[in-house]
Amino acid sequence: MDRARNIIHSYPPQGITGRGIGIAVLDTGISPLEDFTYPQNRIVAFKDFVNEIATPYDDNGHGTHVKC
Image (tube, rainbow, N blue to C red; front, side, top):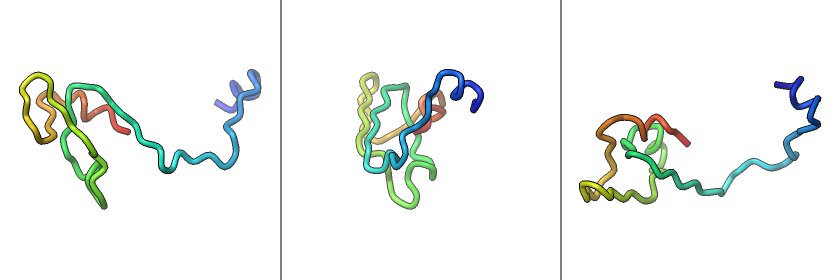
């Protein structure tokens, strides 16, 4: 990876961490696993457009695989 960065002169900006940035993921679902809920719940919204279930779930596992 460093070789490619050197060739195209692509270096990440210094001092940028991403802290405080929110991300929206539109996918098949998300299971409220410990990765997302501990030490605090990072799932701030959930919308089921198919079954209209109100609480987060993932009935096929793909959406939970797309972790942020």
